[in-house]
Length: 143
Image 1 (spheres, one colour):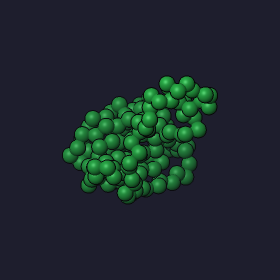
Image 2 (cartoon, helix red, strand yellow):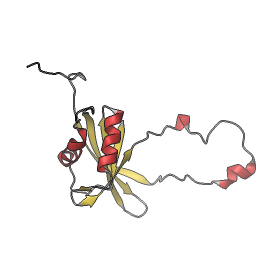
Image 3 (cartoon, helix red, strand yellow):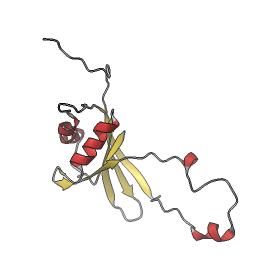
Image 4 (cartoon, one colour):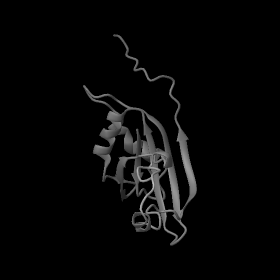
């Protein structure tokens, strides 16, 4: 599952995010521990008013662990800013529920002239770190 960390500070780097998420990744007695697949920090600039948004995408190998991270780390401080942590949904134009391919009446077509999504965003810079796994298995030592 991919989680998104919204409203992160401009000085936040990949190591800060890894340290922020690490306590929630660890499993306890009956909880599964998780691993990070990648961490990607993206900076988007609105070309209309010049506002800059910073956010991070984190791929976690288990959905249960990702939900635990969302629950524990939402509205917590990261590098001096209170951030929002939630699940990231990938949108595709192919499965858009608004476009069914059928003919619509003129009244429905005229209801929405423009796109509701923000379309004046430009990606400024991306800082990513890929983490490679050798195996998904958990190895235990015998005493």
